Length: 202
Ligand SMILES: [Zn+2]
Image (tube, rainbow, N blue to C red; front, side, top):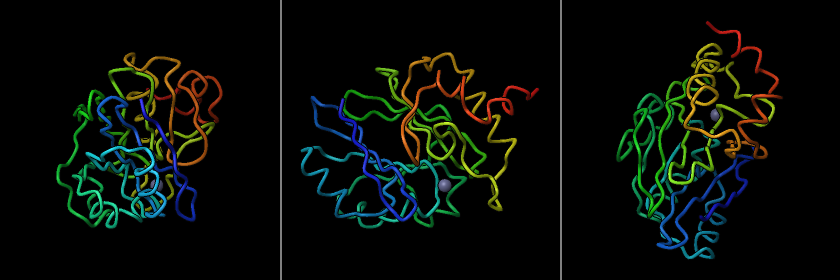
């Protein structure tokens, strides 16, 4: 599997490339800025971008969207509930449970509102080895909910129901968040600062 991270934008957003190392088909996740760097990395990897995903519509995740979409000519996927933030029409709106094939890989969509109404996580289901958690779940922490459309309780429910209690996601699954370093599901279950908040939900 091809898995690359490029740190972009003033906010240190993680832009990811995930791809099939046999077919060289790949997806671009959260092109938040630095389009030259993203394009150079894609060239070096010798992959074809088949899809652009947004984990959510905040500007630090979409800053290079127009440039990269034009350059790669790939369809844009995100959840409709963030359309008001993205401001560019999707080629396809994603729903909870959708699966998008990228070469031999499959990215499964979990709708995880809270940080924004249309936030999603993307889980690679052929290996079950990686979950792109956007700004829903970070190493040791969670995404902000103090935006006008943020919702703390919704975020806690999203993390608990879609990630922590989702038995399809293995404990050692890598968590690749929208900012800062990677983690694992097991680590966040044990050490995340907010674990008490989602554990106490009804
Ligand atoms: Zn955000």
